[in-house]
Amino acid sequence: MGKNVLKTIATGDMFITRRIAKDGYEGFEEVRDCIMEHDVKFSNLEMTFHDQEGYPAAESGGTWAMMEPGALDDIQRFGFNLYNTANNHSGDYGQEGVMATIRHLNERDMVFSGTGKNLGDASKACYLETRKGRVALISVSSTFSAASRAGGQSHQMIGRPGLNPLRSSTRYHVDPAHYEMAQELVKVTKVNAEMEFEIRNGYFNPLEPGVLPFGNAGMFILDEKNWIESIPNQEDMKRITDEIAEARKQADVVFVSFHGHETDGEDTTVPAMFLETFSRACIDAGAHAVIGHGPHELRGIEIYKGGLILYSLGNFLFETETVSLQPYDAYINRKMPLDTKVGSYMDNRSKNGTVGYGVLENIWRAVMAAWDMEDGKITQVQLYPITLGLHDKRPHKGLPRMSGSEETLRYLQQLSEPYGTKIRIENGVGYIDL
Image (cartoon, rainbow, N blue to C red; front, top):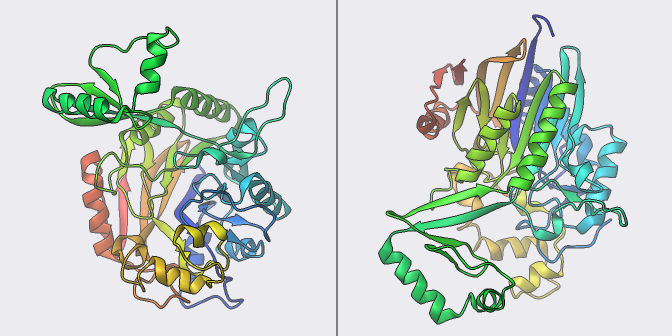
């Protein structure tokens, strides 16, 4: 790459349910022009794209997410050229929906990673060719329904279409008093009865002292104090870091994208411990940047061994309430008549716009993060605040506009302080100098 400066920009979740007007919208050009100044332009496609070419899954990512394939053409008008497709909506319409989305992406020559016809396909990096170097992207999701996880091939059978998973486990460290409470609760509920039967009959090994499962919900660990430990699945970690090592051989720059909602406590702006462990391990394995999204709000930024970790960029385009169709399960789950229209369904879910994402300020402010790389090293990060229209009416809400909000940047400063990251603010743009 010589002395060429590779310029990358990344955005968060794109949940698109309306077509964008042919002449754009007020503020479209400013967002597009900012994105187009860069060589690599990334976004997360939190949507399936097809015309009912899959079956509604029994579980969705919250809203069954399907949009007509033509919306992919609208997305490209922003200038994006690199995408993640692994998230909690990937499997909303089953394996058929996964494959239909892949087909419509391929028809448009869109470069993406995170889903595939089997686990190997979903796990592999995609490659973007630019004038200034070859860029690899590996995409994973830690938030997903079991049925949306891709499966590997055996010597006898084909694999299962789906997403590239990052599983995790949680251990609840508790002091002696709370450990006794957990023991009593296990005794009363009989939640471990099946496991205890298998141990008595020699099929399972006895538990170690101070270790107490609570069914499938997690593990209590006797400790001196109360704290929560979440751990990434080592099988998934090896598969992902092996792919990073391979991508380092085949590309000039390697990025990892993860979609993760998880937190270990009540503060949704703090990522779960396992997501921090995972992100740092990706940098250790050779990734230059890790791009996080999923909780629909901003999380902090960490500079780790010269690598960039964006724990969540929030939303880029967020139109959950104008999805055009919802399946049987959506109405049954809310005990609503099956002939209910989607607009009424959304009114019911949001209690007429008084609860949920629609009224939470943090959902509607975000940043686009950009960074410059020279000779494989990040030299500076730029943070461009955007607003998605908290107070706009439903038919217009969710479209990104440049905001230049120093309030958003100061908020991101606070979220990043625990990682020791310093963000300076100049003329409505945040900067991190490496």
